[in-house]
Image (cartoon, rainbow, N blue to C red; front, side):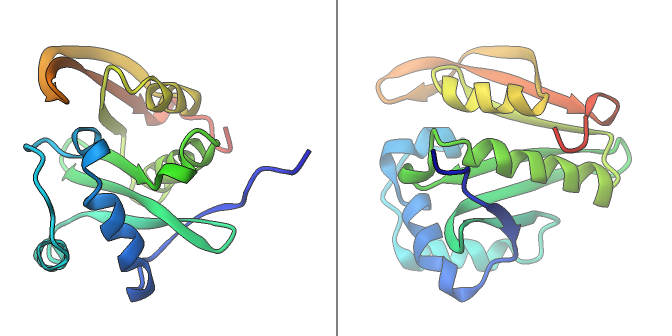
Length: 174
């Protein structure tokens, strides 16, 4: 049985932009990644969005598997006074369901607690995205609540599951 792939978080390069654009423009998973209504995304719009975010206090890594970019993982919406931030991850379809997201979120949480001195990291997931919720729970995230029928997803209302992890609950190298 082959071993698990090597998952690394690293800085973005220009070579990653095509993969990241393909994820951002994917209408099939739009609602899992965005709080706004789905719409076609041009490459120009994508590039402008990246440029506009350059000054924000956001930490975004490329998720790399065995030398190939397969997605991104971010910490954003920092509250430095309260010591928390929101986490997000997006992967290409072939990288889902293989433990890659779990490994990437594990590294992102470690970075947030150890390098950014956060006390809490939280995230949101659409209730039907059970694979993502399971991955977050493996890392140590707890379900803290839900926003009932909060998102319009592919023709129906869905709950948003709110999850969080405290630094005191985090087990390094989990």
